[in-house]
Length: 236
Image (cartoon, rainbow, N blue to C red; front, top):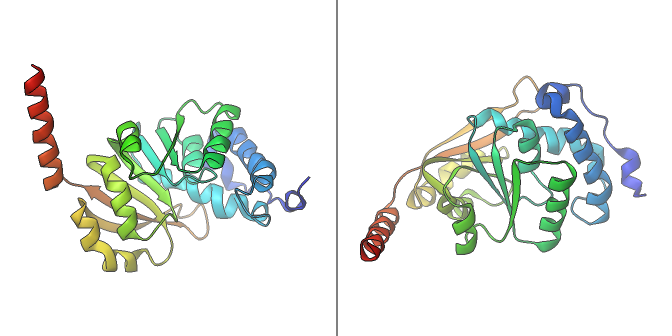
């Protein structure tokens, strides 16, 4: 048994409100992380002492920024943040976890099976790779948590988001500064109307900070549509 599991954080009372009748699944996920997650080097040995407050609840409240019944692609999922807590709290969402490292995708597949998360699938690869875009593209929402600064995050996320869809990324206190610094880079790949919001207000302290943007059509999109139309015309 890993020493850190002896320091596992008690479940906060607010978890019942956030997860409802799926609280048992959230509990089991925390247990898996506290044991297997530490053993396999997916989280640090000190993290079980703050899994609920720093990671699980922080991720689950992201659902406040996402409309019902949407397809969500979570890039750089790692040990499952924010995608797995989000999928547990919001069973109406179709969640795709994208992660490049085999040992992590193996862990994610095991978690999905163990928790019987029928609304979750796992894709191995980098978000910007064409095979991943082919499988996971056209998302209503792309999420992430502490993956990269906005300029790189926008470049990786935008190809996966349908026109009219949204980026909903968990960020830190510097989120507004990232918008100031990288708004032009985000705009070049079709992400506009950048804004910062708090979610989980009144539930968790501090609330989670979310950076959002809307995907608009770009010249690259228009060229791609014309190429697709020409191909379709040749086939007909």
